[in-house]
Length: 561
Image (cartoon, rainbow, N blue to C red; front, side, top):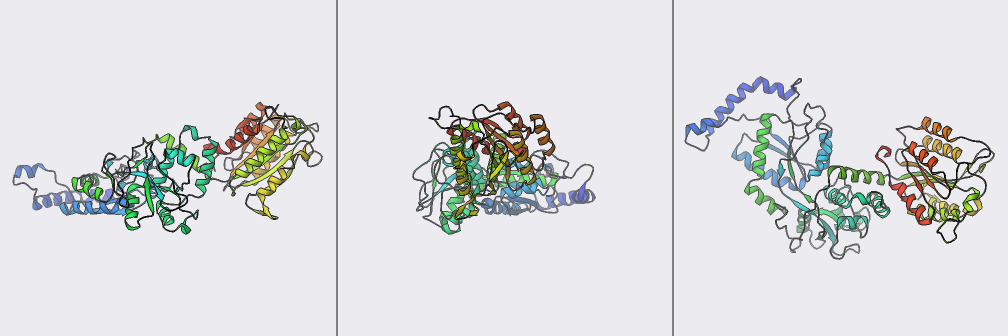
C-alpha cells in the first residue's frame, strides 16, 4: 500500500517516523523555504506563506501506460521548479491497479484511463481505517473509443456503424478484449448492453462467442492486426481502441487500420487523477501540486501533442494522414448497469455442463397447438436438436429420457447420451453429432406414464455428485404432463425434501423446467425455485427453442460459478 494516513489507534511505520521527527522536518522545511526564496522581495509576503516540509519519499503514482510518458515529463518539470515535490511514476494497466487497491496495495495517486474502474474500489483499502470511496480530482485528457477497422482484411467493416450495441449484439465481425482487463473493450461492451439485451437470445449467443475468443489486451489485438497468424481467431477483425492509441500505432505502422466511430455516440477514456483517500497531509500537498502541474497550459499542450484531446469538443489527431473522425460523447451507464453487464459477460463466458431430461411418455404423441400437426415429441426433437447445435463446443452435455420403468422396474429414466464435451470425438464425428443422432430416434422412445419426480431427484443427485466448478451446472427438464407413476415413487414434498437435503451453496446446480401441453406448471415452478432456476411454458418449436436458450442465458448472480 502507498504511504497513506495510518489508523488513529495504530500509527504505522510512516506515522511513527513522522511523529518522531516532525519538529525537525518543520524547522528544516522552514529554513529551506526561506533560504531558496519565495519569488518576492517583500518579507511580509514570504512570512505569510506556509512552510512545507519535504517528504522522505516521493509520491508514488500508477498511471495508464499510454499517458505515462507525458505525466513523467510534466512532473519532472514540477520537481525541477520545486525540489521538495518529488514523484515516482509507474506505467500500470488500470485493471491491475484496481486489483491492487482491493488487496490493500494502493498507490498514492492513480491516473486510470477511465473512471469506470472506480467501480472496483468501493470497499476502500483493506487494512486502512479510511473507508471513503476513491474519487477523481478531475480529468487530465480525453480520447474517444473508436473502432480499429483493418484496411485490407476480409472481416473489415464497410462504412460507418450505428452503435456499439448493434455491432456487438447483432451484426458485423468484431473482436473484443476481456472487459475485465482492457478498458477500451470494457467501455464498448458496457455501451452495447441495455435492459433489453439481458435475455436477448441473439445478443446472448454473440456474447458467448465473443467471450470465448476475447483477447487479453488492446496490444494483443494490435499484434493480430500486424500479423493475423498471432490472433486468437487467426483473423484480423475490427476491435475497440482508444483513438490516441490507434494514432500512435498508425504513426509507426501505417496503412493497416482506420478509425471508425458509431453514429450514435461512443464512450471516452477520460484519464482521471485520483489521489488515495487516506494520504498523509504532506503527501496530499505533493499530490495537489502534481494535479496543478498536470493541468497547466504546458501539460495540456503536451497531452494534445501526444494525440489526446484536451476535451470532447476539441479536435483529435490525424491517423494515416486522415483527419480525426467526428465523434459524439455517449453518456456513461450507471454503476448498477455496468456491474450487471459485466456479470452477464462472466456467466455467459462459463461453459455449460447440462443434463437434459426429456419426457417420452405416451402423451407426447399429442398434436401440439399451432404447429401444423406436429406432435409434442416432434416439437421437442426439432427444438432440442437446434439448441444443441447452437451450444459452444466447450460445453458438456448429457441426455436422459424418462417415462416409467425406462431403465428397468422402478427406474423411470435411461441415458441416451453420456456427459461429455460437445467437441469430443465419437466414432467418425463428435459428441454433438451423437446427441443429434439420439434425438432423431425420438419416436422410438415413446411409451409409458410420467415418472417426473423420481427422475428429477435422480438427475439432481447425479449433477450434484459430479459437480464441476469449471462449468455452469444445470438440469433442464422438458415435460408435457403431471407426475404420474403407477409404481409409486416420490411425492412432490418428498422431492422437495430430497433437493433441500442435497443442495450445496458451494456446488450450485440449477434445475430449469419447461412445461408443454398440460404440464403441472405450479409443481415445475416450485422445483426450479428451490435451486435458483427458472420455469417456462412452451408449445411450438419457436417457443421451446426460445425458452431453452433463454434458460441457458438467464443465469442469476447467486448461481454463478
